[in-house]
Image (cartoon, rainbow, N blue to C red; front, side, top):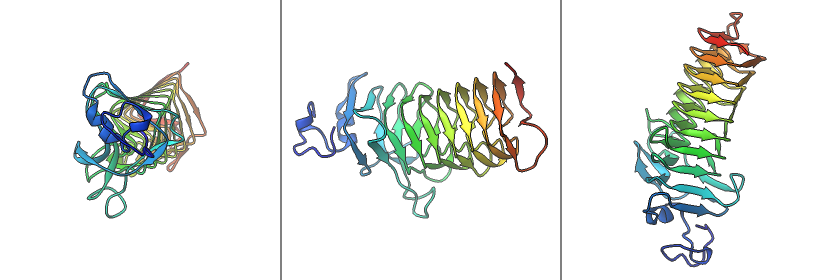
Length: 264
């Protein structure tokens, strides 16, 4: 689909007759495993209510939604609630069904209704996959950037959670970067997640686990994260880890608190 399409005609099989909005193309892709390709643009209109919040784009089948030219030029934009945060009027960027794949987008400025999760993307299960994406400046009660799902080669930046998991909550991350995310409670970066070959830098939590809490890290780097207890991690396991420049609001002399570390 192409935002500047001059003659959108279903079933949108070529660029000359492409849909102008992503949801219209998705709704016609009814066969499992189908692809919807998206050209350059900032997509910030429309909405569908799924998972307790209106979503700018709802991928409700096991299919692949992919950009043509990558996240720098293909953006799905949500919106904050009426008060500037979570709550009434909020629009999440993307809902992703089990088995669906999202490839090559920036997801920005999304938010959720009160007490909901995943401001950037809500994944219906761990089998939903997000790859080559930038999850930027989203907000939710839990998992400011993302809830659940499997993330590959993606960047989480400037996301925040009213409660826990500034970048993500209950997710699996592979070769991802989490920087400058925050949470009012626990885990400025990742909460209740598994991270493999990831870098967590300059994330912050008001309470526990600036980098992560209740998570498992494998071959990860934690650099300059900030938390009242456990600047790097709280209640987690870090395998083959590197900790550098870990900060503490209360300096208790540990890089990570109440965590089990298995060194290289």
